[in-house]
Length: 275
Length: 275
DNA sequence: GGCAATATTTCGTTTAACGAAATGCTGCAT
DNA sequence: ATGCAGCATTTCGTTAAACGAAATATTGCC
Image (tube, rainbow over all chains, first blue to last red; front, top):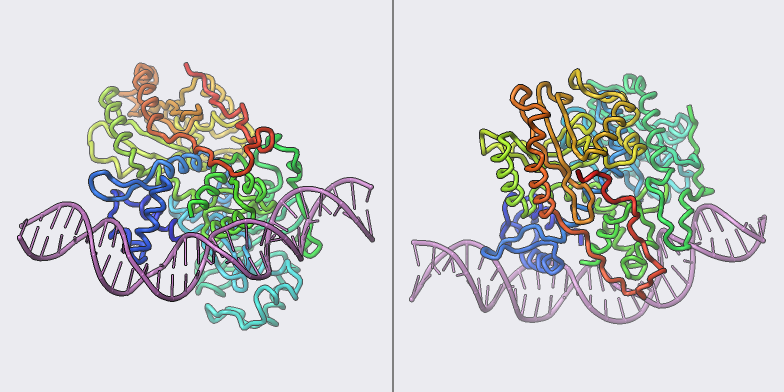
């Protein structure tokens, strides 16, 4: 099903309408598959065929969807603006992450230098056990749940510094739990230093992180610590965007619309020292 | 497979993040189906969940796709022709912009002299708070959302005339809101004068702008105003190239009139004086 | 008229979608 | 504390759809 989106993206990215063969090559899928997917997409109005050539291009329904998405973009931009501000302060790439299952997912990311390619990397995923954000999330869980989520180990090794044994990881998590700061010095990517602080919702539960990272010669853990106040400030600002409803919900049905602020899982109250 | 697009459209169309139940009702699909589809879409980065609430909203990958679609839609040729026609009339560089998050993005552009430079510049970005188009977009938002999007300020200064304080900006936005014309006299680039008018979709929502600009000695605000009718004409023509709103997919559930009615809030109409 | 290049169909296999119903959470009210 | 209500998530047997190698049809071109 996501293959269809891959095809769609190729169509959208192309400067000119594409032939079936071109799409087949670019998507790396067998031809009949691409053909069938395109048939579906065409039936759904998401792609069109040029009347003359049999080439595929963006369909009306996709254009409409794109417009709706663009119109809503300001709603999602608040967090991006916060990240941009943070990047200006710290001068290094920063990102905003959430936990999704046994991975960390990059919700948004702002690079230091290039102001344009921001969305390229966001949406990608990294492991929990060897990243600053990931370990910060793990530190919020009771130990047995960590074991349940990651298994008993050993965990995949990415660099010489990756923690691969459960006992060592639990020890590291206790430290992080106490300090409220996730760190990663080359545990996932060689020569990459990363520092993550928690973003908490109204109930004080950690639901996201704000992190900065940079290359090892330029960034060290010690230097990064100087930016903790800036990171914390950004994290608080992020927290403010997740509690309050972005737009007042319409009256709608009698259903529980008012229940925006939610939950408070007995299991995962904030375990973090608010240093 | 097209069901997934239906779900995606509902997410894109919503003014605020949606819960699983809301989506289930609006799509007219069984709950586990919607749940599974959303899981896939989430894994693919096409939708995201609100950090705290379990609601779904537009994901990074979908945002990226939407921008690509706008940049390379089959309507591109038509839009370009409209811009070229406009450039002939006004004799200055003109462009077609949309808001993308907290920036203005150039969808298309035609220069006065060299007719080949178009693709070079399209896709590039400029700030909201100090450009004619950007301020026009901002003027469409309620004041508290402007503050949320840009922060409290001060905003980055580019020239001596850049408005860097929130209060002054809000005042300027009120003026623009009333007049329906965005202006910029050297606030972003020294010596550049710019005039922007809104492009509205069928629902009257401001979704893009058409703007002209030129160097200060040759172009002044007063002279530019003479071309307002031409700009407006081009803006109307541009509006016709913009997609219609997504048509509701017929839910299989009893077409509950009072039951599920979501309705557009009256507020979302154009806030601009149609002078 | 024939040759390439490209588009489309066939078909048996495999996989994933499907959705009714059951279960699990969470927060609120008693 | 307890239970209830609303919502999210999982289960599971069924069924339909995706899959892709290979064969076939179409198209454009010389």
